[in-house]
Length: 340
Ligand code: SAM
Ligand code: SF4
Ligand code: SF4
Image (tube, rainbow, N blue to C red; front, side):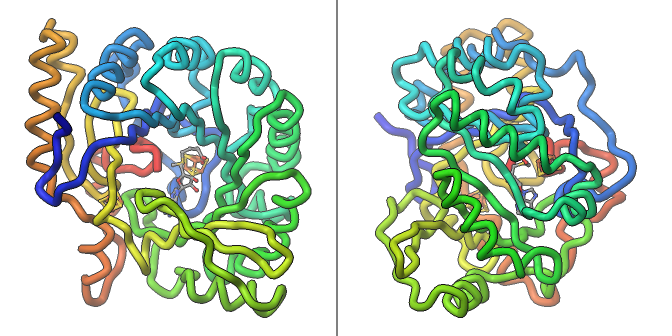
């Protein structure tokens, strides 16, 4: 029987972070100069990751997304992909990547059985890319997207976080790029998650503003039906091009949130905004039986009441969510540890 949380939400989707390291320093995720990393010995082996993932399958998860940090920094990632792809209950096995290392990895990931790739890309302008990520890597990302198409990934997605004054003038250019490579673009609102230490309300470029900007370029925009548990609302341009908007900040979708996150060191988080998690690594390494671990998972999910983005929306005078001094003490609070 499906385990439901306190708001009646099932667990269907798992985001597996395979590393907290990253080769970019996006301004909304890792703007600081120094970070405290998860101890290497705490990072789950692939065998441990697969053992825990199997339990999530027994909870009802059928969608798994690999993330990070930058997941392609994890050595031998295709071997984990192959082990997960062999699980018949995973109907959707996806990867979210910044694309920098994708050109070299795409063929192996495809051969290993990965179903889908989402690439995060916020600008088409090389100097702007460098300014926003502190690395000069736009050509590599574009080559990565190209390689993903060539090796046969269909259903490619491009996720673009739009921040006011940084790249809101590129919504049309990003859509056109998506069109040219056959990828659906999803615009994401800037969230005040842990790690976004420069977040401020007036840097958010809202869904309403995105739609207004796009309508001024393309003309009337029509909504498209989308599954209720999907975070993106879908729309189409007058010429039929489809795109999505993930309005996590101005129109949160917590009521239908069926996602859990597992950090690279085996901490289960029930919300992007969760301040505490449940350590599954310790009991796993101490020899807890699958049944014990599954009962733990069930109990934790049953008690879940999280609706972080909705609660944040009602905060008056909203500023940074987690202060830098607190972030520095616990890497688990960082977006690059929990995986987005
Ligand atoms: N490094 C990979 C990447 O960038 O695709 C995977 C991990 S990253 C944390 C996952 C997603 O979180 C990315 O699409 C990124 O743009 C998004 N993200 C990070 N910080 C964000 C923020 N403050 N607001 C909205 N989205 C954010
Ligand atoms: Fe950017 Fe993803 Fe790295 Fe965060 S984890 S800095 S979003 S590439
Ligand atoms: Fe789910 Fe938390 Fe995001 Fe709301 S804020 S949609 S509960 S992860």
